[in-house]
Image 1: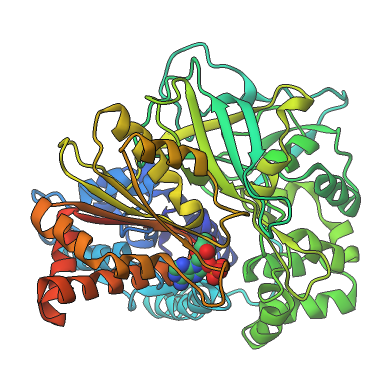
Image 2: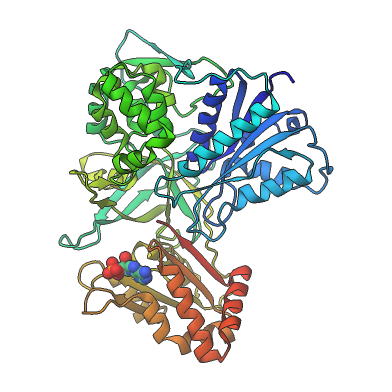
Length: 593
Ligand code: 2AM
């Protein structure tokens, strides 16, 4: 058989699937294969009928849904009208990226696998089920899966010329530096003239109105209540929706990066793709663009780098010591080493570059877009309602900050960046867009809602409470948990007012104000009678939101106990009731880590 063209199609939400797809494409090029890599929604699905070899790299998002950039493909491929056997010429492989702490682990990849079989495709190897929960991240599954994938491909196409070792492929883009030095006009901050609903490809720069710490200064955690002005943006939202944004790298990190790579941050360049098929053109990047702009707002240098980064970096190493170490980190045998060097201490890409100064100084600008992934959008539950705060959008953000064995504390890129923005220092605009959330609140006026939201989990419920009260819906119960009544009980005065008006019943759990921990699930248990009555007799909806890993399960357990105790049902029936509530939307949750 002649050499096939490999088509790598991906559905990516946070960028890992895209990164993996591009890595597969690089491996294919190294094996002298023609390759095309595209997000599923940019691919003409009708062409699948004539493809010979396709790899699908599909992430599953929190609730078991496909990522946004494969939603159209998803609808198409499940059309009943597609003839069985229509993909009988196709050899394919499916790699799923998921998180086993969510119930629908790798649901998209598994479902796609079944559907492709139905349509007659030959699936070359079992679906790869990569898991974010693994110590080494998704690579722990992806690497061995890729090894077997290539074995299958070689078995199918014995004529493929296998190239081993590290060969440096041409970059996806070449940089053409300009002689002049000018500021990049930052398109992201330009107010669009036409009125379109802001989206990922066209966010709206919203003015930052305020950025206020809502936890006591002596409290371990800095939590921010942040307000944006959305005037003129066409942004609309309802309770439960989420706002999306991309953070920027800290300017001191960008300066350090440029020093390490010996790049002039003010140099301006234009990009030219070297192979139109090898990647998606970075439309978000202005042309021409300064190195500083590229590094501040486009490339991610603060994430923990993946094995593929070491693979590519090692190809630049001329210093023997550094090369040996990099080759080891990119080899299967070196994965334990990599785990303790990089993943466990959460070492950032920039810190790794600083550890390999000779190699880093050799890096060519042309390879920047191959080496570093794009900064991915982050989502936050909206914490306000347009009814209570017209033309405003508010969020509640816990600034991520923790210690590992690294000397410097680890920081969350987006939350630290947000916390650093100060409207008192001059106008600040943040490009935003809004997405429908998973939490939906009842339309009927009399349906009570019970909301369990410890910590920043309360954000969507503040929005819901403001919205519901404005609509005259007063049957609201909130369970809020925090560490201490005096340190992190944010929005207290707002809750007090709602309670005074008879619009809210609030139960609080201050986990550290007494000897023994008290959590929201304890309060749920204590109020079993009330909850059973509301759920069984008044069809109340029950919501859980928050970032504590075990919290949602613990709350569900408390609820099941309440059903047993107050409703006299068996443990199995209580389990069944919860499952039914979940299916019908009477029980909903939104959790994050
Ligand atoms: P802790 O930090 O004292 O353990 C908001 O973060 C609140 O959620 C805090 O009071 C925190 O308590 C609490 N929390 C932590 N783990 C939890 C769990 N498994 N279930 C419920 N609440 C939890």
